[in-house]
Image (cartoon, rainbow, N blue to C red; front, side):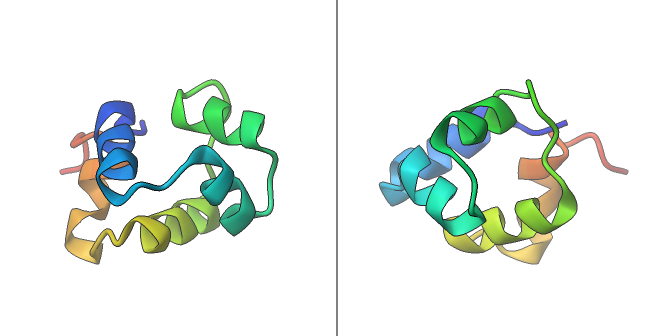
Length: 71
């Protein structure tokens, strides 16, 4: 499960808007909102591109995109 608060905090820190994410992922801004808030699933390719946009290193990936639930 996506760690929504951590994602939103990182977006705020990096000054990245949902429009920026939508452009990077090739989807509509409302869809970005739904994915960030867990209404719609985010596939692995989207998560990888989103992580790159946010400057998330591979070692941190699980903290953001799995909510710290990965063993």
